[in-house]
Length: 330
Image (cartoon, rainbow, N blue to C red):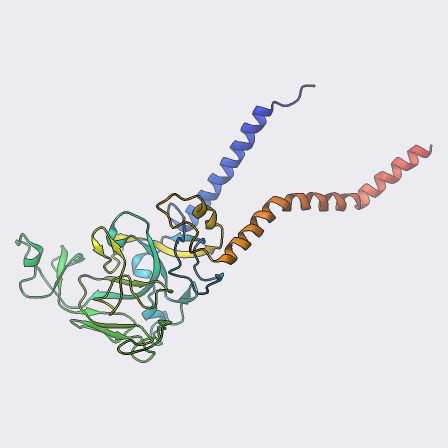
């Protein structure tokens, strides 16, 4: 009888491992509808507790990217409005969905932040489509929005007034919202109030450049991604084309689904110089990650010992032992 070929055994084990990973990825793709179906959180902009918290989004977490239609995204304004059908809806520890998007549609690492409000066109007027410069598209006033369908059926229209679902803003040229629990749901900035700075989120006299979703990291103390023109004092986030605008549908990567804590830390450890690495990962995540890895390594050993003990004490094994002893006596 010849022994098995070690090389063939290695190839078989490698093929089995690749097949298992492929089935896992395909299963996640079928569940989320996106590829890749997971993203690794790299920053602390969404953290709720300094030491990390399962249920919110920490650096080092893996997040499922769900293929949710743009119009189905629930904003903080809607989820915190008692008169809205989405009132009470929460995701990752707060009201409203967390979305993943590319800044201004540019390439690069996507942003994962909470959808705060959605600005929609209310009154519109048809543009001058013979104009050669965008500044001349709206001779009768309004803001040119290249992504909104005009009443003539073509893409692009001049927006005269705006509305924000979940708030009292309807048919307004500019947008002012106090998220103080009265005018709109209460959004806590987690900062000290002082002269001209409220403890809650305030959008003040903002005239949008186009429709879309305003976003904010839960840990960013009301500094919205869209900058100081939306919320006074906000630094905003930047791409090659400037400060991020309200998130358009074409910029959307997906909506944050389930959270797999800690495991993304491994990827951050192995990332190159263009990655922040593990500097934002909570200390507790390393401990839990070590426990998970240790469990994966030692669980099979413990399981084997336990199964052997169970087998040895089983009635069948006891009976077999008695039969062997009886045969030996004869």
